Length: 302
Image (cartoon, rainbow, N blue to C red):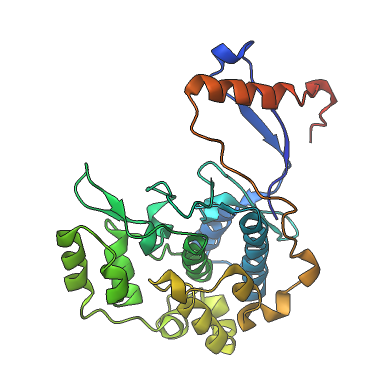
């Protein structure tokens, strides 16, 4: 369920001139954002709940492979999933994926509407600290937000201030998480905003209040208990309370679509390249391209 890279090429003639690299991948299908938008625009069903369960399971299998190689994707969103005619999901766009580093992680991962609380950074511009050194569980928050979007067509945390929107929807931020924010004014501001926040009832919102796709209403009701628990174990501020990828694959909400034989771990880990200069990176990329040459004339065009 991870996009397959066929080859890379550049039009430059030397590593010193290298400015652009083009990647060719397998044809994986249309992006999910476009398909969900089409459902909304036409008010016409394209996917059933079982389709969405399979997609979430596909995505979790991709993450299991990545995490076993010590990689976090960090930019999970419908734009980065391709869906083929068989409704198989393929994970795309590894532009800001990173090797898991328990000492430090870069501060601005991914689209802000899908970001977990622990990836936010607070404080003056010249003295910003992330809440914690985050790990692969940051991707699990994104999965909860994506599942909601599948069922409604709405971006759950779309707002000028997505974190405040998350408080409005997911309730109070635990004091233990707030206490990890070093910047005092940010910490106390969020404590005040969060103090009386109440978590929404996701099933009520989806099935009773009419936020969910009308054609999914009965399926949502039939899966209410498992679906509610899946939201409660992904859209939760403390990453320690979130499902792991393996726990999510085993979750009762996804039980009927699980395929053990497709849950394949990586056979090796990926390691970070030490900090390098721009010129050193150009040399590395140039070698990666030219050590694996391919004739464009031999590539089938479909």
